[in-house]
Length: 79
Image 1 (tube, rainbow, N blue to C red):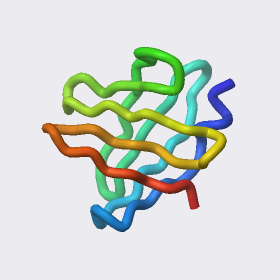
Image 2 (cartoon, rainbow, N blue to C red):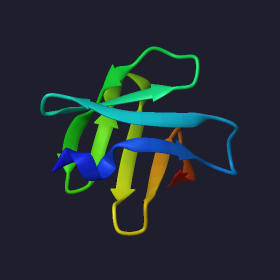
Image 3 (cartoon, rainbow, N blue to C red):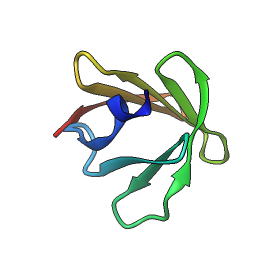
Image 4 (spheres, rainbow, N blue to C red):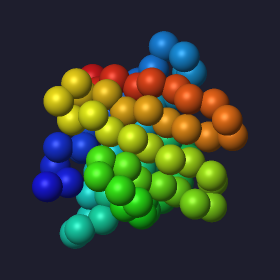
């Protein structure tokens, strides 16, 4: 089930790439040059990284993800 989220995501709004992988039944997010972090599921297609105040909402059909942090929303597309 988590496999639909796995991939590398990029955005024309911010100059970073997010790599989504999994370990067992846990999604992992890693930003270019940063440490990997486990994501917590919060609702359907939505995961959060509480310590960074990040919410990731995936749309597997559209191959997109919206990153919400600090009042900003950034759309990423799976490469």
